[in-house]
Each structure stands twice: as structure tokens, then as C-alpha cells.
Amino acid sequence: MKRGVAFVVAMLTASALAGAFASSARAADAPRGQIVANSNACMGCHAVDRKLVGPSFQQIATKYKGDAQAPAKLSRKVKDGGSGVWGMIPMPAHQSMSDADIRTVVDWVLAGAPSK
Image (cartoon, rainbow, N blue to C red; front, side):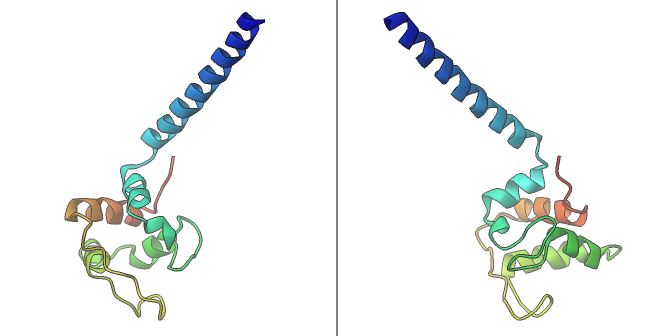
């Protein structure tokens, strides 16, 4: 009987580990901009393909398509916050995000926020 219990415990452990590895593999497959956005609470107000509190990342990409100044404008907006472009709800400043992380997210958004 003890061998049967040990086998079940071993199988459950293996299953849990396989799930953890699969989850981290999916995260590793995600675009870097999406990973940075997820880790900096961007997804609390934005979604890739639908409006939440703020516009979707795809709406942002469409609005700024072809605007050579968009990366600088949006990077500044993320860092300093602001309101009025998408309505009256203000976007909070993200002063603690590094400029490199901001640019990674902005570049990903302007590329249409593709996900894998």
C-alpha cells in the first residue's frame, strides 16, 4: 500500500512540475515588451485587443501608425503620465520604470502588440 501512495505522490509531483515548466516556457515565448508590460502593471489598465480603463494596445498602435515621433511621445507619456488623448481618465506616471523598459513596451505596442 505504501508503494501505491508513493507512486501517486510521485505522479502528482511530476504533473505539478510539468505544469510549472510549461507555464515558464510560455512566458519565455512571449515578446519582451509583453513581459515588461505584465511586470509593470500596464495590463491593469490596458489589454492587447480591447479597451479597459485605457485604450487597447492595438488601438494605440493604430492611432500612432506612421508617426515618426510616436516612440518619443509615448515614452514621455508612460514616464510622466497625462490625460486628454483618450478621454478624461488620466494615465498615472510610471517614474520608477527604466527608460529601457518603457521603450521596450512602447516599441512592442507600436508593432501592434503581437503575442505568440
